Length: 111
Image (cartoon, rainbow, N blue to C red; front, side, top):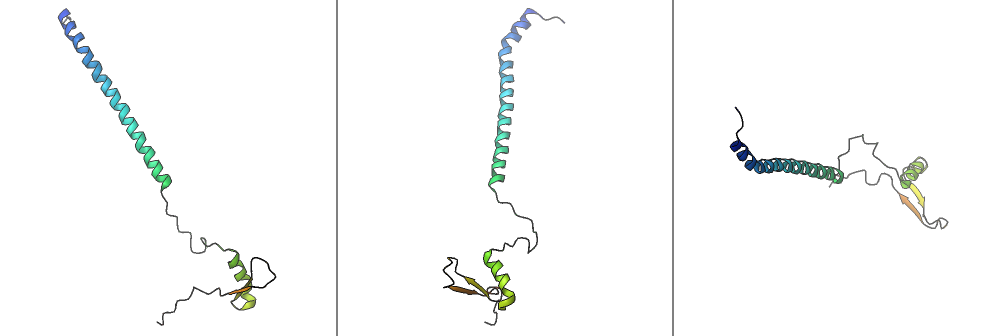
């Protein structure tokens, strides 16, 4: 079956429609790609800004002992549970703070 000149005229007249269809398909694919990239960026930004739950490492692993806690532990043996601390300004011991290391650990439920 041979192609007649009239068939070529019909195909040439339809050629612009086929080209438009191909262009729309390409643009659609590019649009889909850009949407997917935006979603990935949004998810990444949410992961960066979110606070993640830490794994349980036990009770003692998360404790931080500051300078007051170290002094309290050092003084527990000799002062029978009371920590004596001099003023941080170093004025020669004018102000002495006495702290109980057990303070805040016991709950009185007698009412």
